[in-house]
Amino acid sequence: MKVFKKVIVTCVILVVLLLLGSLALNRANDYFMKKTYPLKYSDIVAKEATANHLDPALVYSIMKAESNFNPDAQSHAGAIGLMQLTPDTFAWIQTKLKSEAKFTEQDLYKPEVNIRYGCKLLSLLLDKYSQTGTALGAYNAGIGTVNSWLKNPDISKDGTSLDNIPYAETKNYVSAVLKNYDNYRKLYQFNSKGENNNG
View 1 (cartoon, helix red, strand yellow):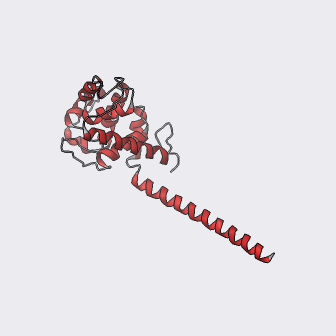
View 2: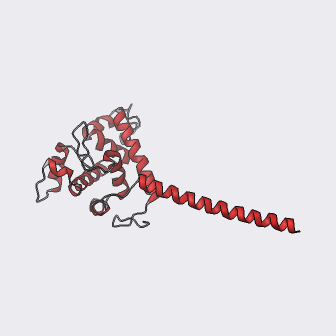
View 3: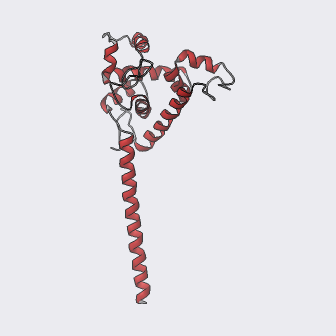
């Protein structure tokens, strides 16, 4: 009987140790994932995502893919800042926002300006295209390019979704943002003000 009790106690201890180990592993994984998918510039993102009726998780996903949160990032195509806007696109979006202030290309290095206009562009694209992946394709390759793709049955069977993106860069970009988006939605819960509810 004593041996049986010792076996039971040993089993209980092992189960407790396994549970504690699993809990520690889950916390370590959560910590690592949140370091990999951070919420940088959260005040600005919350404000602009709310103003443009965007899911903050998607805004963070684009910033991670575009600049990895580097406000000084520049692409080979001349895109600038956190959400990688080209000066031409920036000038076009300014006509849509009709802001009292007139910004210059250098202002794209300012997080509050870049995120504001990047969110406005994303909002316009999501309004124009019914599929998130299509809007992301246009964010990367441009509206004119995506419109021509949607007319091509080899690229889009239904005229709304991009089934076969011909540019490798755009295909990889859309895939990366959607992966980021999935991870951000799993890691964080945002309230109606665009703020993270679960720290």
